Amino acid sequence: MDLMITAHIKSSYEEWKGLFDADAGPRGDLCDEARTMVGKVDERTAIIALFDVDMAALGQRLNDPEFQKMTEPYVDHHDVYTIEPMAPPG
Image (cartoon, rainbow, N blue to C red; front, top):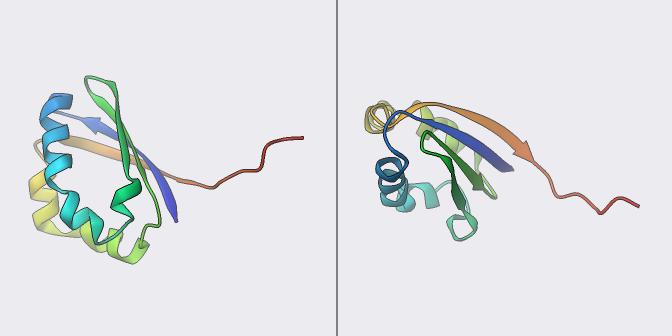
């Protein structure tokens, strides 16, 4: 499954991005990290695209107390959406 995630940031975007980049290895265990995209919306918001996500592994990761402890100073919450490729209208 492909996901689009909005990260609502408590820290600065730059601090959050450092944490996000440092987590590439573990994140690669649950999605196609080579296709992961991330961008700054504003100082307190980032958008993340994850592809070929193993939803069971993602659920375990998000509920892991160590992951929650690591992200708590940086992230208020995430909004998660599924995305699907679409044929051009017409």
